[in-house]
Image (cartoon, rainbow, N blue to C red; front, side, top):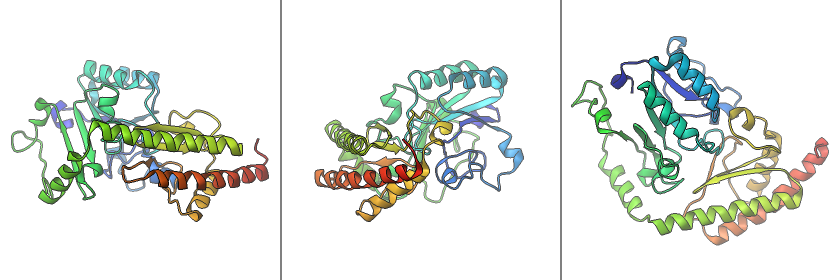
Length: 309
């Protein structure tokens, strides 16, 4: 994006993670947020200075940023569905706004679909929200279990890459035949019907979790899209990192340990997504919901001890 535009500044959003690179490991959520260290030590201030961070889902913030830095911005990079502060969906009109502002300013829109690709929909969040980015990043899920990452985009942007263009890129495992073959074999097994099945499984699980929490008197917010979901231990809707951070982490810890004791291993952080798989059976969902009913009862007892209503 920098090579194509000739500009230096990159815009990212607080709580979104885009890989272990100096320029983007700033306010990156997920593991760093779990440890209470949203900014990683070791990032040179000179590099971080060209990374502009703003709150997610805040139209006014991004408008003000472009008004101030528009002709210096090379790209905006955003998760199609934020997954590194838990599953937080873009508000209606937010991704179209990013598309509009970047086009007007001559900047690129990069949609990171490492989490949402083949999960939000067959065509990822870009298909679901009908957004055409300039560049897109994919990973993990496209490798059929083997390590792989990929990026692509509009022809005029991709033609800047070596060997056709001056922007250098290479890698020891670029186009690795084993990973690509495994990924193709996986993707060839997917279909529109299978994605409907996957979404239905996720809906069944999430509705069951909501019912179990309500029965126990535990306030939660459940976000889901496609096969992505997160249970937030929060009384209020969450739309960005600041609102996610108001969740009761101590209640999540009680829930996590209770689920683990019952044989259900969740990601050990309030700031992580859950993912449904076609490999999960109806019986797996039933057992998970049975465990959740007990877990939410334990959370309810914990809340009572804390004097929370």
